[in-house]
Structures are given as structure tokens and as C-alpha cells.
Image (cartoon, rainbow, N blue to C red; front, side, top):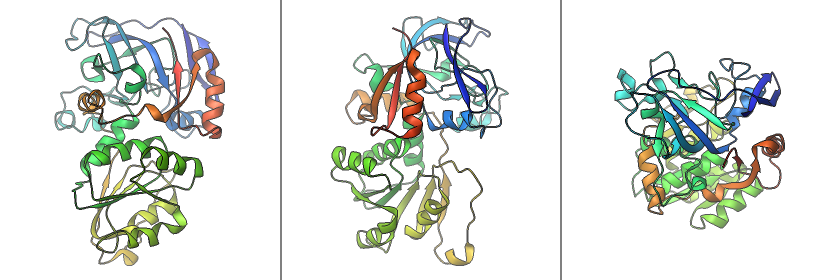
Length: 346
């Protein structure tokens, strides 16, 4: 089968590999219909994910059709259309039972697909712990509508979930990339009084204005003043930082009102510093929103009910045979790209 493989630092290549086989009774083999490209794939490409294994097939955001299941798998059957979870988790350890699946203690737990084991930018993928790693797609939901469920939408949903948002709140979201917009979609479910999105890219600001006209948008340079002008208590009640820059980390706590919640969703290239003397008296609560994909069934239901629609984020589509071009477009942020769908098989 055709796969997109991490061959060396800075280089992915289309490589023929054998079709995967079941290795454990809890495995499933999925025929991948659609995959997507994530910024984390670029991190692997450029060598900033030390645990990534050279020679693995990349890709951790995908949907497909179950082809084969192990003898212990009970939640899905061959022929089911499914989303694939970015996290591999056992469902049985202390953390899994509490919904903190990102911290699964199994030796294969955490981000495995497309990082430590072969992922889904391929025609087929083996999914460990299939009962936890796969969710059936409702009949009324298309593959494109479900494509982002297992990763960026799960990240946004978890971030909104832990941020304790109320209907009286002013919520600031910093960053309007794919994860930022998915976070916005999930914050909208909470129906806060006011939502502000801060973004420096003109195309992304235009996208938010076009699709979510009730949301205020602002550039980083003007963010602090606009937040103060459009909040009831001198700053945002909740801030979600989804951009991942030194400047946006500082902006997040600066824009928060005293006693606010600051949820950090972003992944940083280097350590950030809390300037505690400057922050003294603000009494902020910081939370981190690394993806804990334990609510995929719920988000699929929201999609089926028309309450979440991530399909507009998919701005470009390529066949697997042209995935090099798709990566070039995505990494170069050309042509207004937000997310790219890759057609792996039919």
C-alpha cells in the first residue's frame, strides 16, 4: 500500500509498505478514506518531536472504514465508518478512567499513531485499543464532516470543557488556526456573553468574520485595548491561548481580568516564564488543555445535530499521490489554507 513516511529529518516520502495486520486482540485495521495534515506532522518533519520514529508512516487525523477487528474488540465491526482518535489509550488505568486519556500509563499510550507507530496518511492503518480509539460515525454525518473529530476538534472541545465558561463571560481566544477555530466552535456551544478572537493573519481574520459574524476579531497589537473596552470587569473572564508564541503567552495573562481562568491549549517550542511580580494580585488560574480525546462520541452527536460544523475548515483536498503538494501548500500557508483533506482510498 502507499504511505507517506518519515524517512529522515526534514524529509517525508511516498513509500510502498505492506498492508498492516492485526498484532493484538484489541487491534482493528481501518481502510483510510480521508486523512488530514496537522502542524504536529510538520514538527515531526523538522525534527522537533524527539520521540518520533524514523520510518513510521505519519498522520494522526483520519476517518475510514473498519476492515478487520481483533477477537476482543466489541464496539465496532467490519464495515463501520469510524473516526480515529489521535490518542492511543487503554481505557483501564487510573488516568483513562478519569477521562485523562492523554496520560494513559500503558506503554503504548499517548500519541502513538503517526509518531511512534504507523499512522494514517496511508491506505490502511492499524489502530491499537480499537474500542477506545474508534468512534462510529452517524449515518447522517459525512466523512468530511467527521474528519477533524479525533484531533483538533477534540482539542478544542477539551479546552472549552475545562475552562468553566458561563453565559456571563467574555471569552478571549488567541489564535485562529485550525485548533483555534475548533476551540471557537466549542466555546460557542457554551453561549458566553461575548467572544473575541485575536489573530495576526488577515486571511484567518477574514475567515472568522465571514463564518462567525457575531464574534469580535482583533489583531495582537490592538487586543488588550479591545478586550478592556468589551469586557465588564477590566479583562476577559476566560482566555484560551491557542497560538503558541512567547508574545501570545504574555498577551493571554495580560488580557485576563483578576481571578480569571487562562487555559493554555498551545504547544510551545520552548519554556515560558511566569513573571510573578508583574502578575501579583491578579490571582489567575492557569490550566493546560492538551488533547484528551474522551468526548469524540459527544462531538459526533453535536455534528449530527448541526451544532458543530468543521467542514468549512477543509479548504483544500488532494489525493494521496499528490500529498507532497498538499504539504507544500499547508506549510507555506498559501491560498488561504486552513486544513487539507487527503483522499487515501475509496
